[in-house]
Image (cartoon, rainbow, N blue to C red; front, side):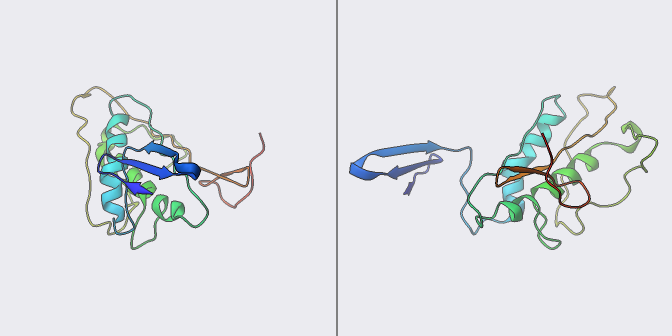
Length: 156
């Protein structure tokens, strides 16, 4: 395996064949949650406010760090809590559409995350916002809704 500076990994296979894979970003084990968020997720949040969909997808072998990167811990929040905090911090409460059965957002999603990010939404001064998210895990060919209470596989 060779990691080149161009975000490309080359894998030398049997009989000298080389397979090349390119990525938007490659991180080593020393990179912290905040840096991964800034490089990988913050641009997706900015896209949301430009009326574009965003998907954050983590893929890898069991034990490779996907859950830690996405969820994190209370002391090292992962991508999901940082994304949600940034979304809600970026929307003025006066422009947030809240369904009648929910209370307005008042709590910090990421306690003591270290830094707060605000996405500039001034280019859309007449917009109101309603936030809808889904968070699923696919494990052993079963789908789990990570935002539902309890851990039960979904049926298709």
